Length: 121
Image 1 (cartoon, rainbow, N blue to C red):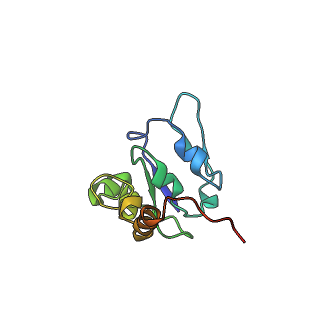
Image 2: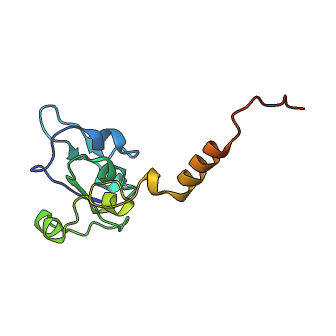
């Protein structure tokens, strides 16, 4: 469940507002968004993944608010942790170029003949 939106880290880009499928956040003109409907959080982590400045923390427990503090999240290095685990942030290998299916597809494309094809029967 969404636990923290750090006002000190947030740039008010509203990416979390746009990314959230459950409409948990509320945009605030001229300020950072707020967690307006915390109980509606589906714990999908999309807000945390897409936040460009790692200002959000989503706890893995979808049913309960843990009450973790922002200081504890900072001390544990949890801001942006889920995105890093997925390979979405700098400092960790990953992404499509490391995906074996991507490499297989690229190999199959380069191995395909380039001459004229026979018409389909």
